Structures are given as C-alpha cells and as structure tokens.
Amino acid sequence: MTRTDLAPAPARDADPADVTRVAVSTVIFSLRRDHGDHGPRLVLPLVRRTRDPYEGLWALPGGWLAIAEGLEDAASRTLEETTALTPSYLEQLYAFGDVDRSPTRVVSIVYWALLREGEVDAQVAAHEADGTAPENVRWVDVSDLPPLAFDHDQIVGYALWRLRNKVGYSRIAHGLLADEFTLAELREVYEAILGRRLDPANFRRQAENSGTLIPTDRFRTGSHRPARLYRYNRDVELADRGPLGIRPAPNRA
Amino acid sequence: MTRTDLAPAPARDADPADVTRVAVSTVIFSLRRDHGDHGPRLVLPLVRRTRDPYEGLWALPGGWLAIAEGLEDAASRTLEETTALTPSYLEQLYAFGDVDRSPTRVVSIVYWALLREGEVDAQVAAHEADGTAPENVRWVDVSDLPPLAFDHDQIVGYALWRLRNKVGYSRIAHGLLADEFTLAELREVYEAILGRRLDPANFRRQAENSGTLIPTDRFRTGSHRPARLYRYNRDVELADRGPLGIRPAPNRA
Image 1 (cartoon, one colour):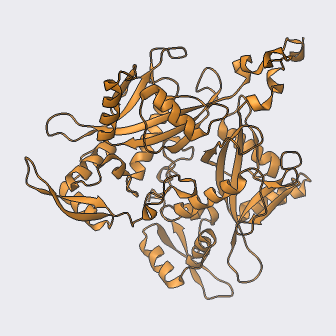
Image 2 (cartoon, rainbow over the protein chains, first blue to last red; image 1 turned 180 degrees about the vertical axis):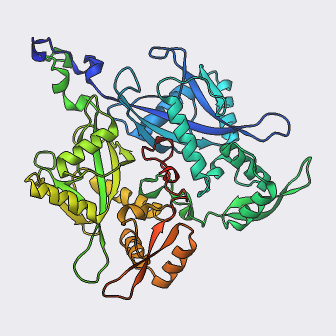
C-alpha cells in the first residue's frame, strides 16, 4: 500500500511527523534587586508548561506562529498572552531548528528584549490590580535556572552570550537603566550581565573616557555621598539595529 | 458550501494558503578582480528562477527545508544543488517572515558566508572540468544588482549592512583574504566591503596599531616595490561565534 492509498487527511490534522511547524519564543532580561546593599541580579521570566510535551517543566514564553501574522507580531502576542509583558521593542535573536529539539519538527524563531526594573513592576502591578495577572509565570535568576523544556537551556545560554558580548560595544545596558544613572548603577548593570565584580575605579575611568556618557548637573542623594547622574550620549551610534530596525535611529529621535 | 464540504487533500497537497513553510537561502560574498590595477569588487552569486513565482528573475540560492534536516544542513545542501559552492562554514544571518514576502506563507532562514577569490575559482573550475557546472548562476557586483525575486533585495541589503558593521570590530575581512596579505590588499578588502576609498596612510597606521595583525618576514614582490606580508593574530578573539559556533575557537586551532 502506497502513501496515496491512505485516506487523505485535511492539512490541519496531518500527521505532525510530516509537517515542520514554526513557533516563536522570547527571552526577556530584566534586573531584580533584593533589599539591602547588594547589586541587582539579571532575571528572566519562565512559564510552566500545562500540557505535553514537557508538562510541568519551565519554558520560555512563546507559542505558534499564526498564518497571517509577522514573526515579531507573533512574538509580542504570545509574550503578552503568557506573561502579560509588553516590551517597547523586540529584537530577533536566532532561529533554532535542530531536528530533535522537540518530539515533532518545530523551528523556533527566538526574540529577545530588555525591560527596566520599573517597567516590569508597573506592568505586573497593573495586571494584579485588575485581576488579569498571568499564572504559571516565574522570574528566575539567570545563574539559578531550573531544568527547562525543549532546547530552551541552549537558547538562554545563547541569549546570555549575545548580551554579554554586546554590552562591550553598544549602549545595550541602557535598556536596563533609567534615563539618568550614576556610574555605580551603570557598573552594577555590567556586573549583573557579566556575572562578575568589576573594579570601581577602573570602571569609572573607562566609562568617563568612553565618549558615550554625558554628565548632568544632577546628583543622586541618599545614604551615600551624592553621586553625579549621567545619561547616554545619543549622538554616538552604537546599538543601531540596521535596515531592519523598527525604532527610529537615536540621532533622529 | 463550507470548507469542510470540500474533498480533503493530503497534507502535502494542502492549500498552500493554509500552511507556513520553511525555506533557507544563502548570501555568499566573495571578491572579484578585473585585470588591471583596480581593487577587487564585492560580488555574490544569484540563481535565475526557472518556475513561478518570479520565473526568470534572479534570486538568492536556496530551497525548502526537508523534514529531517537541520537548518544549516539545508542551507549547505540547497547552496550546493543550485551553485555547486561548498563554503567551509555558514553563519545564520536572520529569519525573514513577513506575511506578504511570497505569494504563499514562507519563513526563510537566511545563512551567509564569505568565500575567498581562490576558493570560488577552484570550485567553479572543478565543476566545469567534470561537466557539472550549474546553469543559471551569475556572480553579480553588490553595487549593480538586477531586480530580485521575493524580498531578496531586502535580504541582500541587510547582509551587506551586517558585513559592513562587522568589519569594524572583527577579523571578518580575513574570510576574504589569503592567510598572508599585504596592508594594501587588506585595505582593498575593506574598500570593497565599505564601498568607498580609504586613505592608505591612515589605514596603515590603524591596522598596525590594532594589535590584530602580525608582520611576517616575507614580502610580496612584483611590479611594485616589495610589500611586507602580514597575518592575523589568532590569539585576539574577535569573531567568536559563541556557544552555537561549530568552528573551533581561533586560539584552540
């Protein structure tokens, strides 16, 4: 009996083993700060799976690409459906398509974004207030991840590697900071991303000589001695997203 | 009559409007040199389409992802089938998935690679010698592209932007050069990538101060005065492909 002798099934009920499907997933990095004088930690949201495969395990937010939906739109939609988060932009990270990365054949287009502490808190609080807070979501420390479904540990590892690489030649740390920040706050973001301590004096010297920071007339006051606030120099083009970018270029903002 | 009244078609003949399919395409950059004293030009291979959609137009080498084939394997296979080229590695560039980029819904995972002049010539010559040279392939100057099928002009534009960005902070030009090269040859590669002339004295000074080049004891002799040959310093980690890289890191080679 050949394949064409079988009763043909409609496309949507086709044997999944015969079809490559496209999914999207998103890695959202943010910072979380414990009480006390420790620096912030780099965290990301995970969603507990409520169905097979990998039921009960944690996974990146995501879902299937719809037939009439762009890739980034699908990433935004599935992120909001699973976590209620709405970052101001998403950047494509990589397409993962190993044959055995899922029980059926799935190519996942992965997006990533940075969210400031305040943005996460505000979005979570708004959803808790109106009773629409998503269930099954947990923010976890990147240095203390639980076992993840599919190849999501590889995806997180790659996203971390890209973030750590990128912080060296772009103003990407700005995506995790308020518009104005002290050099100590900037250093803490670098330390959270790189996962190691940096020498404060060396960091200060390099930051001041980088040409990417502009000192303001304002100071952070509090329990320490007043510290000058800085902002990024938007004339320095460092994190251009290129011809595919959807955000206006910094010097056109 | 509703859709379910229609005789269902087998999965593989399903109405293409209902299925998202995954394709791969590849952008191969190389250099081509005319006779005379001009510098090299940046070129890439295109394949003339022999079927609809866009029959007769030029397109990037590529094809469909097979169900049991990894993304990079598919890119290698379709590249070889269409152009007979076999680069030593491919790097993933971007996934293009706009809803209207093709008459049916197609997500294309695009790979790219650099091929040295000698590699292209050797591979083409071998195939011409045994009568297996592919038809319908043409190498074109990136500054003089014909109209391209699908969104391939956008893809080439993005690949060029990435190449131009990357040449600033990596040893990517090495992928287009022999192991040893003069500073004039290196400058010509930069000029071909950037599409503009560079001041020879400034370029020489920056290259010598970059820490990425090692002078050898050998010289290029010919019609000009002898010029020292350089090679890249492989201890300087500049073009690491990260945890997804399949090439050994330079300092482990």
